Amino acid sequence: MVYKWHNSIKGAIHVGSHLGDMVEPSQSKSNLIKSFFLRVSDLLNLAMSTAEKIECAVIGAGVIGLAVARALALQGREVIILESEDAIGLGTSSRNSEVIHAGIYYDTGSLKAKLCVQGKLALYDYCESHGVTHQRCGKMIVAVHDGQLEKLEALQQKAVDNDVNDLIWQDQQTTLAMEPALNAVASLLSPSTGLINSHALMLAFQGDAESAGTMIAFNSPVLGGAITDNSIRLDIGGATPLTLDCEIVINSAGLHAQRVAGSIAGFPPEMVPGTFYAKGNYFSLAGQSPFSHLIYPIPEEAGLGVHLTLDLSGQARFGPDVEWVDKIDYEVDPAQGDKFYAAVRSYWPELPNNALIPGYSGIRPKLKGPGNPPMDFVFNGPAEHGIQGLVNLFGIESPGLTASLAIADEAIKRLK
Image 1 (cartoon, one colour):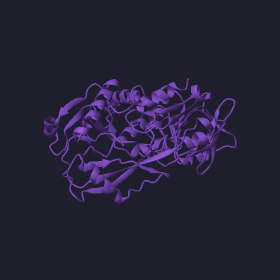
Image 2 (cartoon, rainbow, N blue to C red):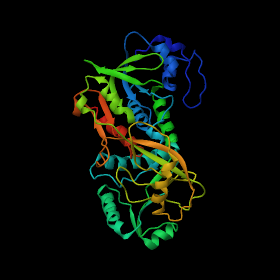
Image 3 (cartoon, rainbow, N blue to C red):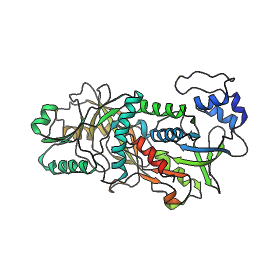
Image 4 (tube, one colour):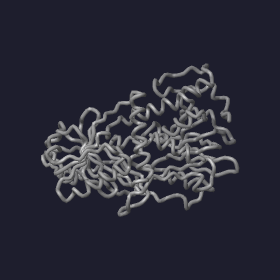
């Protein structure tokens, strides 16, 4: 299908996504579409009284949306990304631990387990080939007393069941030889766990998608839509409203995915799961960290416990905790630090007083509330709801960053 864009796009001025250079109006339409992303000013020129037509619309420019758009564009499809914010990755994608997970914790046979292991391998290859900053630093999961040894053994077995076969059991002597500041009776070493610059990864996905012809419309929230006889119609807000008729829609709106799906007339409301927010706060360490590995306690309800991670410069941070909230609010309450001291001192007793500084927070898009077991990723496609061309991605929390390439491939498979 050919884009049905208004001819006035020929006179639009675009801003390059990487260089920020202004483009002369005389540049050809085809080069503009292939080389630059649409800004809101462009949509002013595109607005028409009738719906515009496009092959694929991806909702959300987080790491998942960018990965999906990249994969679609590399298949030769015409793609636009609709992003409600004014830049990429301002939600969950930029508010996490930036850890490349091994695939240890997730229920065997689940999408989380499968896509994490597949995605980890693909992500390391991608980082190498695209120059995305990352580090295979490894992580240690620690038992701080004998009563946790059984849980540690169970984690090792779950890892094997999930095709994670590189974990190393370490007794107390070996554990403390590697990390002398720890309080631990044993540990599991995961050598394939690593760190990644999530923003650099998103820029790389963005660049691939751009090179393959993808456009992005910032400040363009999806307000609603409808299922029609031959398309999925989306109503786009912003400075000038716009309506798009799409053959394919991938809803990767993260924390807002359920709202978006529920706003599309003709989509079965019973197919929209509940929305629950699990906030995770992070505190940074003032001063130098004594650790060279990531340090994880035994997992807790709704999360992996208050763990110690490092950024790529070696600065330590702790989190996330689990705080159930009713609305999206990223402010970190300094008073939360009190429980951080207790949690961290269980495995690092020498954590100094006044060493934790409020850092940042993120919110996990949960499908069940407190007291419920973690749920799997949900790919809600034509096989589930019967609407051709529409795939909703619900509950894409950790390990979404690690699994992003695999999630994109799986989302496209679900179109069939």
